[in-house]
Image (cartoon, rainbow, N blue to C red; front, side, top):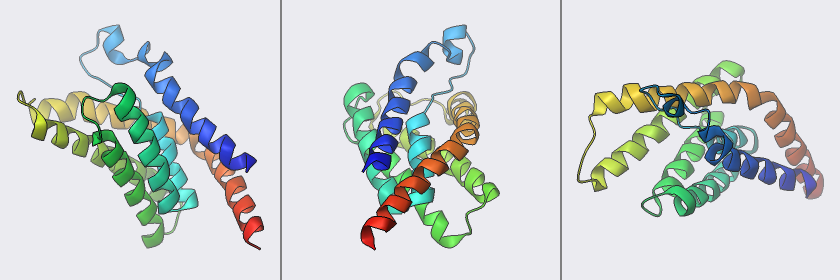
Length: 175
């Protein structure tokens, strides 16, 4: 039970960091024209879905998305849906391809881009003042994907070890 609790607390800590401390170092706080939205808890949930399976990733994505909706969202359910779908599809990649570093990091980039695009599409669907697609891609989506990709590279090894401990504990319990 301890490794899973530690994993959950780690993802919650990442969620708290992205909404508090990391807002101070965002590019918009420094006057830059682009926005890099930290989605570190989502990156953690995507990596969890790689290591523990798509169902685990789906649950973590749903939970983190629900917290995002409650605390920061304008419409309840948008982040829950997008983060859940992102984590589920990341977990599906493990079933289709071997899990090596190249596949993991390319998938992380594609899933993060897909998440941001789906988020933009849903907000554009319900918005009365749409924003230009080219501007959103160049000033919001690509910087966010780049920032979160760098974080994925940094957290890959520690999170893989933590997920390994969770998986060992789960397999020992089933034996």
